[in-house]
Length: 121
Image (tube, rainbow, N blue to C red; front, top):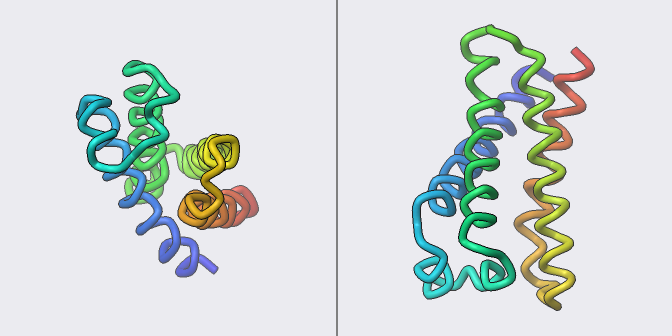
C-alpha cells in the first residue's frame, strides 16, 4: 500500500506544483489566451490564491513524507487538494463545461486515495 500511495502522490504533487506555479505567476489575461477560460469568472487575486493553494498542497503532499517531519500534513494537504478539485468541478459544471471535469475528477480521486491511505496509517 505504501508504494501505491507514493506512486499516486508523486505525480499528483508534480501536477499540482506546475498548475499552481502557472496560476500564481502568470497574469489572468495570459491564462485566458492560453485556453484557461474559467479564469474569467474570478479576479486576478482569486486566481493567484488558487494557484498558491495548489502550490502549497503540492508541497504539503510531498515534503513532510520525504523528510519524515510532521507526516500528518500529508493527508491534510491531500484532503485540501481534493476539496479544491471538488470546487473546480463545480465551477466547470456551472459554466456548462462537462467535458472539462475529467482532469479535476481524476485529481480529486487521486487526492482522496492519498488522503484515506495516509490518514489510515
